[in-house]
Amino acid sequence: MFGPNLFHNAFSLISVILFSIGFTALMLHRNLIKKIIGFNIMDTAVYLFLASKGYIEGRKAPIIVDNVQSVSAYINPIPAGLVLTGIVVSVSVTALMLSITIRLYERYHTLDIDEISLRSRKDSPGRSKYNKTVKDDDDEGDTA
Image (cartoon, rainbow, N blue to C red; front, side):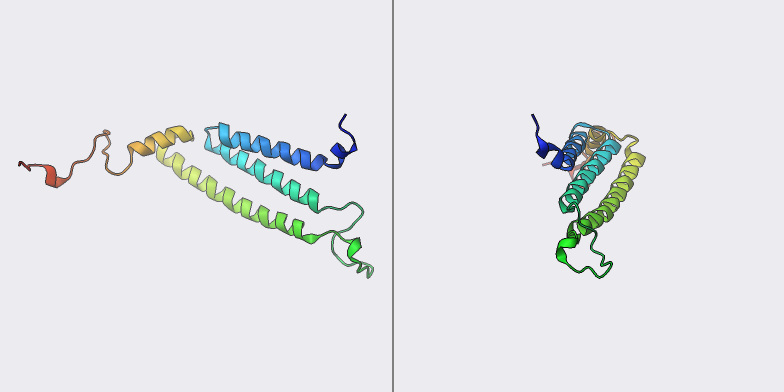
């Protein structure tokens, strides 16, 4: 039914499934930590896809050993370099997202994105703690 191409593209299929799981977690969960985990699953899926496309069976890493300098003996190092660079960027972005999440939790005492959004609207400039608009000093006592 599926044929030999399914097993040939197994890593691509797994990366699509992982990306879908991460995207679903990112879109459907309201908890910020779960959104960050979904984002990291999506990153991992992209790295798996790039690594699987850069690998050629029977070839070796591009490190010259035994004076073999033929191009056909080695894999392309660019996908591996992209994966390593992506991992470094992903770790940095995750650290930034977690630090912002900690600050949001300290301020609003919740990780629910809808609750944070609602509370941030209440705390927005131009509104007091009691959800009334703040009047200017000039408006008091003006009679026309």
